[in-house]
Length: 187
Picture 1 (cartoon, rainbow, N blue to C red):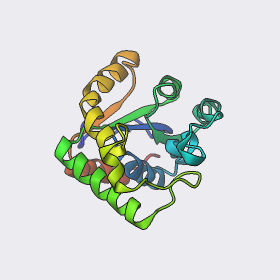
Picture 2: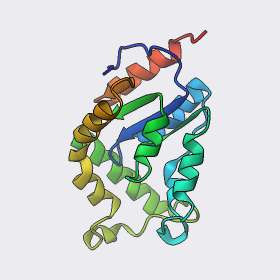
Picture 3: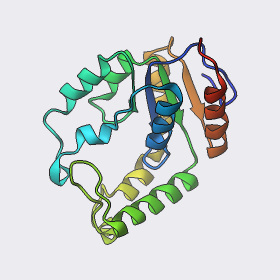
């Protein structure tokens, strides 16, 4: 396991960013894409079809992505995880505390809902009040699944003991590590 001040052993080309909803996976993946000049694919855009229905092509598209020479995506969706894990050469795992995650996911959800931001394939966040009746509302989902992070990290370590895994536990650690990545010369 690597931490926020550790240098990567080599320039990664196939990167998974793991963490609970609201931890900053997509934000970090986009930043790494710019820093490393590696294409980023948002896995939610592959999964969600119109009206929030799962797309039939999802796993085929994940397999095509995983077969590529370079990519960054999030480590999400149970059926996609093994496909991506088998081909990646770096996992960055965000294990932020629940307070930080919940503050982020609530702010993001409220903003998206009020602005009616279009997300993937024409979908928009449902009205905020649906948090009370929808067990899988993103805020409730983030709360319920937050505790799963350490187990997923252990699974990655067991499944791929050879794989570099960077564990970041705070926004400050994320900033420090991305600064290290930014300053590293890969040639």
